[in-house]
Length: 447
Ligand code: SF4
Image (cartoon, rainbow, N blue to C red; front, top):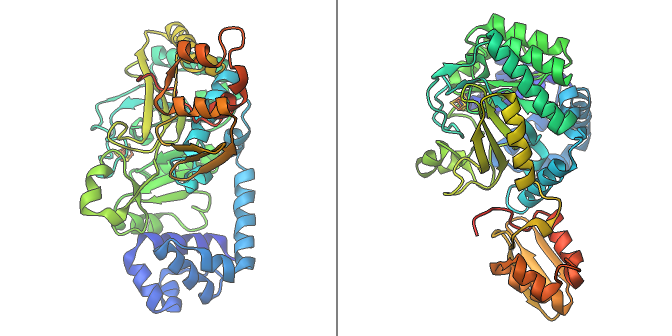
């Protein structure tokens, strides 16, 4: 298989409705006119196209196991050869309390977010905004980013702050601090000094994070320089969001299939078959254009800290199913401002104490997360969420505890009824521990 041409075929099919219709009518002519030779049979490509339209790839899986095995092998090689991906997968923080918190958030989300979310999301631990606002102004922006107002320039003072902030997170999170993005509700290419901040990040964390920008065509020479710098530091991947069909076609003219082999395109133009998560500004699109929106997913991939360097602001976030209370697809646990790195360090210590407890015994109020529906009868318990069902046998005290957890039980009441200070979990300790580790207990402070 010719991977660069296959990739470009997929991007063209997904993103360009004129190519898609032409290919469906006349595959050979459409490929010839686009200058593509994926070296795959038309039957396979047509089945892939049908899968893209219907979002059902089962027929491809059943009919073309050899082609899929080749593609999977190639994708696995790409992934395993990327130090950032490996860092996100294997990072071992020196902070077990943060790691356990992050894992509980991930496990809890398995109940409410599409399984595909977990295959794709890195779940980074840190995102840094090097500005305020974004010049993109995309109609579907999941963070509802305001217009660009300010950039964090690489002045001597800012350089010191930046390097100190990176060190603070490195001390708190260990190698997990490298699982980061240098943008959030910002576009990284809006900052003219971006490359210097990346260089510092690399020196501190020994990994070059990928980029996502909607401006690969604003200055193609800068795009190429940035990509080359990434490759030099072991990071071949760049991610580009294309929001208009004309942009996609210009992108194809500017950058060859071979040149973009390591890059990924987020096809956000209206004609694309891609869908948006129903977050931020896309929530308004939902009523007029429901087929462009997909439920039970989020664009948020951060379980950890969001830092805005201009505002000197830190927030603790984790992904969640978007709803009225969390319209951006993340839950905001807390936020605070700091004057300098020393104050940030103190703040993070307090956040750790308050939000990353070592066990459920630290919760003042015990309650099942509201995404679970519980039924208990005849010694059996069943917990059902949007995507998971959990069934197990329960003793009488465990059944009584589960019933209490539906609406919640204070720590004092729990101690009185199920254990007390000398036996913190009493005879229901195993169950409580399992619910805790699975992220099934609510840790939100809204009781
Ligand atoms: S989607 Fe990205 S590029 Fe577009 S406005 Fe939002 S943050 Fe900016």
